[in-house]
Image (cartoon, rainbow, N blue to C red; front, side, top):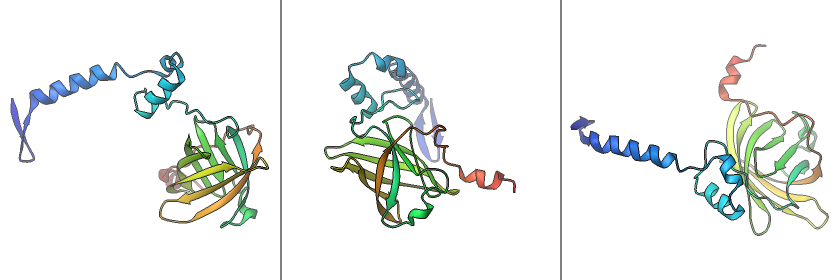
Length: 184
C-alpha cells in the first residue's frame, strides 16, 4: 500500500504501524497522580524527559527561593510604573508560576541552578506577545537580585523582596486575539 504524497512514496502500513506504536507508548506516560508515588529524583527525571501527561510536573525549587517575591526596583525601567497592573510579583514555586511587572503578564518556567534559580517566561506586554529569560540569586540581606531579558530586546536587573501570596492569583497573559475582542 504505497501512495504518492508531494512527489514522495509513502508506505501507509508504516504510517499505521507508527501510529499504533505511538498510542502504546502514550499508555506508558505517567500521570500527575502516578508521579506522586515516584521517588523525587525519578519524578524530576521523568519531567525533564517529557514523560508525563498534559499537566506540568512540579520542579523542586530550593526552599530559600520558593514563594512570591515583590519586585521593588529595576535598573532600566521606571520604578513608579512597576505596579500598573497590580503589585509587581514573581512567583517561584516550581508549578504554575507567574510574573507581573509594568504591563507584562507572563507564565514562568523555573529550574534550580547551582547559584540560584533560572527561568524562562512567555506572556504579553499589553497585548503584544513576547518571551524571555532571567535568573535570580539570593543576596546576604535576604532579597533577590535578578535579571530579566526580553528576547530580541531590553534586559534589566531587579531587586525583589519576599512577599505574601496575593489574595487573587496573577491573571493569565492576554492573547493577541483579546486585543480585537475588547469593547471600549
